[in-house]
Image 1 (cartoon, rainbow, N blue to C red):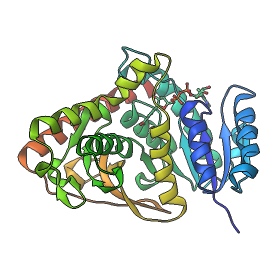
Image 2: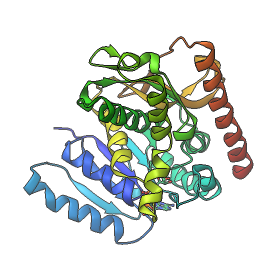
Image 3: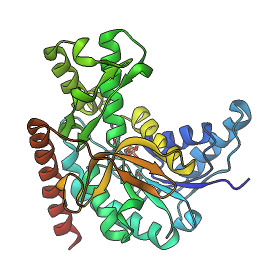
Length: 312
Ligand code: NAD
């Protein structure tokens, strides 16, 4: 069988946990790349040694050279510094633009046909950085934010209703975390509109908690940011790409005419398949939702202006 080749750059908390989820789902052969010699090799070997116990077949390798990534079908970019308590995602911009642009340059040379899945923060600006540096078509670059944000939102709704997380269906638009645009009109529990199950004030509290959930976890951990749910979200996207599942997932996707964005990556529902983003789904918004999305898009544009200045 021809297995997909998946490279994960950054073997830290998010990268290594992505490798774990990807291996356990047998999504393909995995290469973990990091600049710290020994770290990706050690984690890859450790994970490979779990395969006879868990019963998954995958070749898992660690490397410090991008040559090992050659010909990958999907490359996940998690390399970058994470937040510490009191920091916003935007505080990471200057450092992570340098890291993500260097990584993207190396990956684009060796994996010219890959789909890039960006995870490093500030997410929307890092997707733009990868697009600018790689020169890849917009559909082959996609950022992970919405799958995580919507998972947090769904998890808190399930807690409130006292139901299975599997029965909550929801949609969010816009940037990562603070900038997300909740759409209660499109949220349901087992087909029942959420507004019939949770009072408006409580739903607002849930939205706020989901929006700030990254910061809540940073404050608890004190030494870094969340990684289990972010990695699960990333691998849901990778799975849809390598298995051509064509799942509809909220991702940071390139929007030209869509939502009137005019050539930036913003969080929108899209269909993910072998080709990357195969279609952006446009949802008709009311005036309030449109205003919130415009604010979110403006924030993305401001950050991209700063990326342009940093890249020179
Ligand atoms: P981490 O510090 O545990 O891991 C980062 C890894 O990147 C380190 O091992 C480091 O050595 C490596 N690295 C740095 N520069 C590199 C380079 N040039 N080439 C290869 N590897 C390099 O951090 P983490 O918790 O894994 O978080 C990683 C990034 O993901 C952060 O920017 C964080 O903010 C972001 N993040 C995003 C989301 C999201 O939803 N999009 C969620 C969580 C974390």
